[in-house]
Image 1: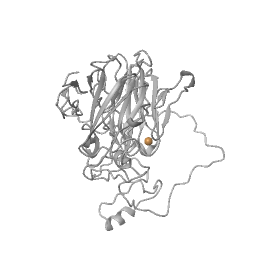
Image 2: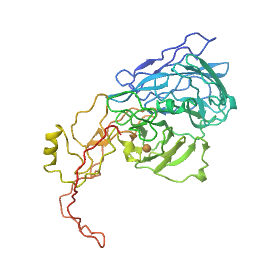
Image 3: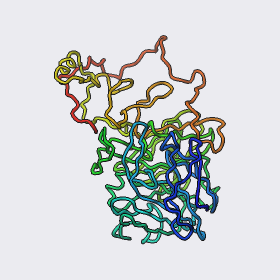
Image 4: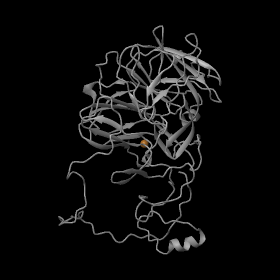
Length: 460
Ligand SMILES: [Cu+2]
């Protein structure tokens, strides 16, 4: 492989890979830097076609990229640099994270079953680290567990890992050193080992993402890493909606989406308009006779699930975590339910005491077109413009766009779906069939409540 690589970003810009080390063939392979894509930092990079070694069909890392390698004496050499990074979570919010080679998550590592792989890990963090190759069957001393199988990689030092990628499948990598801190800061990456025979498990579109969670106080930039469960930003590859690119498929394509979970809770991942099967986990391929149809799959903590389906239904289909709090950005959680509360007169009285107090929630939680001043570096809780208005989403949400007649390698956003005439839900003002009432019930009285409590805490 050449010492300098370039690849085409999603925006079509030619992006040069900056070299950390140019010591040449005798030294470390260069450590390519995350592509920057000019006006769209954090966009999805075009798949990395293998320049040497066995052929394979590359994956697309949603809002991420794959790490180029150097082939040396038949060994694929990669260079990861663990370091502080700034990641734009979505336009309007940046976070001080830790990652690899300029970004969180780190670049996806793609190899082929049977490849001998050598990975150099340079530590530019202020504390020791290590890399665990989650799911790989390898010699124990290469497993990356600080204290158990190796000493920690001290700041400034470089370690070398070497093993054979024995099994095709879906894996990840992350530190096994001060894990709570380092993973809560965004240190993780995907690993895909492609089958030796590219016809095996073949798909036309192959996406990969890792689920993450951060607790960043509105107005600040650095995650609170001691948080156990009460995170306020739920991410796919360290991005949140509307900062996530759509996944694109041509009508009739067989599609795989690989999802790994390195958060502190499970995420039921749901796809609209299609039925899928779990084809692969981080433990290997699921035998065809052992698969069953699903539209949601729970991705447990420390698990990877690769779903497969035929994109046979044209449209813009939501793809998201089914926990409704995980499709929102930073919000106040300690808020009583005020649906039905009569606020008339109350707001004026409170406003005398607290200028700027707003009444919220008496008609539900929709913040649809509400304009509120936000602290610096914070995203709206429910946001994103669609062709029919505000999507009222955030966090772990993106869209699968299925279109007729796309070119094979075309991953560009095709724009919003143009629905055939008469196929969109619409207002009805004509005659209605009767609306039957549940047996034994009477129409609800007007809702009311005795007390109004002001939201107390902002940030969760
Ligand atoms: Cu979730």
